[in-house]
Every structure is written in C-alpha cells, then in structure tokens.
Length: 263
Image (cartoon, rainbow, N blue to C red):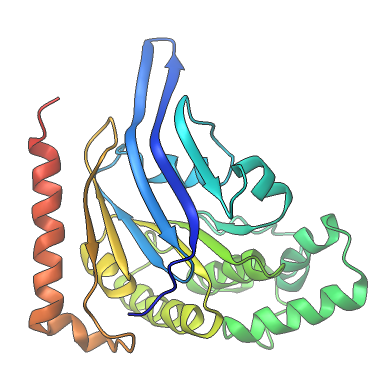
C-alpha cells in the first residue's frame, strides 16, 4: 500500500508509569514509533500491554512520564484543542435520550458550528457509514453494529484527519464484525485519513492494516512492526491466501516473542 511519508504521530522513547496504591505500574516502556499520513496502523498484544494506553496518550487522555510524543507536530494537548482527531471507544457511548443525528451533532454543538453546518456534516457522515435514513432513530432502536457505526460517524463529524479506535468491534459477533471491517476499509480508502486501531484479533489486524504494531506484556514495548504486503483492495476471502496467512504467522510469532521477553 502506498502512503505518504509525512509523519503524523511520532513517539520517541515514550514511557508511562502509573502511581497506584500498590506502587508504581509501568504501562509503557521505551516506545518508539512513527505513524505517517494515510497509514492504517493496528496495535495488537495481550491484555494490559499498553495498546489502549498508547492511544490515550495520543489523545491527551493520559500523559507520559518520560520521552515525548507529537501529533501533527503539536503536543497531544495542543492537537486535542485543534480537533486533530476523532476517538471511537470500545462501547458506542451514545446518549439514549438523543437521536442518532443529535448524538452526532453533539461535538459540533460544543465546537460552535451553526445549525446549517451541523445538519450538513451529519448528513454527510451518515452517508459515509451507510446510516442514511436512521438519523431520527434513537440508539436503542439500532443494532449494536449500527450503534458503533453511529459512533464512528460522530468521530468523523468535524473532519479530523486522524481516527483513533479502541477495539470498536470487539463486542460484536463475527458476521457483523466482518461487515464493519469491510466498511471501515472502504471508509479509510475514501477519506485518506490516518487510523490507529486497537484489537485483540490477529485476522482483524492483518485484514485492516498497512502496518501492525505487536506489543509485549506490561510494561508495554514494541516487539515488531510488520509492514503489510497485501493489496489495497481486500475482499474478505483474501484471508485464505498464503500472503495473508504468512503475515498472520509473523504476528503470532511476534506475540510469542513478547511473552518470552526477559526483563
């Protein structure tokens, strides 16, 4: 896959240690990573390895205790104020008393968009996630997969160039997950945005990504960064090809190597 070499997210010797009642807990150690414009980068590793923590550092929801990180050449706090990214959480997090379109409008309201601008943005992103005609529905009237698409639409509503996704499809069944993986790839292809994606699924990571970042158990370190050799056009049955299985094998080996890492 061809992406530009323009750095969007740059982490250098990044450390993060949490102070807890039981003593310090190091969540990230010496993380060095550059994500370029247009990359689709998946983070995979065992639970507690720092995948989500890294995404939260990018989003200024956590602050590193060592090293440095930049987002579009800014600090994460500056990037947050500049609305440089949208964030999709594990749960859709939609307000049940607001319609789908009103949920999507919420960040636009906070940011001071006019009513006409809000309506235009909502119409556009509903089309992008194939939810046209569902704007007047309430979250409880939609399936789990449709709710998560609405959550993605909300993250896209203010035209951020970066989309951060924390295991957004983990709670969905395999059929729905496959469908949303296909839709997400199509959305990424149309928009050219940069995606950081956390997953526990090797097939999902391989299917979606231009690069796969394999992380070790805590303290989270990067044990491998795998460049995908798969074509940009990826039907689901590409998962049965030797090329796909070879990348999946390397991811699996990277995860094993992380568990064997000697502190």
